[in-house]
Length: 208
Image 1 (cartoon, rainbow, N blue to C red):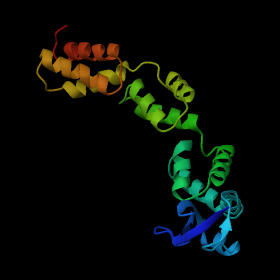
Image 2 (image 1 turned 180 degrees about the vertical axis):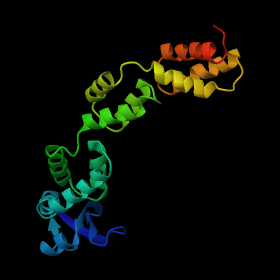
Image 3 (image 1 turned 60 degrees about the vertical axis):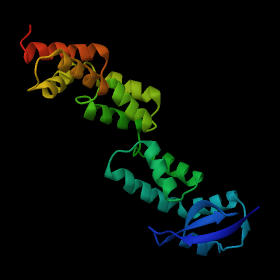
Image 4 (image 1 turned 90 degrees about the horizontal axis):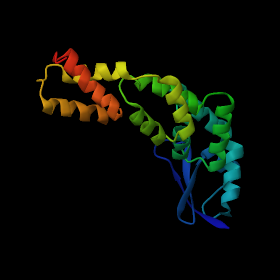
């Protein structure tokens, strides 16, 4: 058994409180849940009991909040989970919301991947896009699938980036090296960096 040692009002949402078990923050609860189950400081309970109370009384509210959150822009599952955890919801409530959102098609990590790739394939290389998506918690297989299906060749993107970056610069070996490194920093491969230098020499510097 654990003891409820503190119930404090949340600063950003006056309709919710933070609940502490044995001096440690456990979760957030709505005031309605606190009143409904007569939760108070000094009361002995278990984490499982608190989680069950929150799930039964707040799952609809949590789902509504998560729905509002994803309606503003496409979000990966990890972002939605982090949003709900910041609100103080327990694992059970978060899982309920994610499952329901996925069931209705409101969260779809592959769709998010594909949209992200389409948005950035003209300004970032595969390596950088892959890193960005992995940091967002997307499964490796979904990332690779989106990259293979949404990107055929990035030569046009590399060409546009290279010409924009080098326009007005002197035709020197130093500037060629800077371009090469710049293309690599954008997540493109070595062959694409070499292609960028070749394009600039041919179209801007007329060396070919």
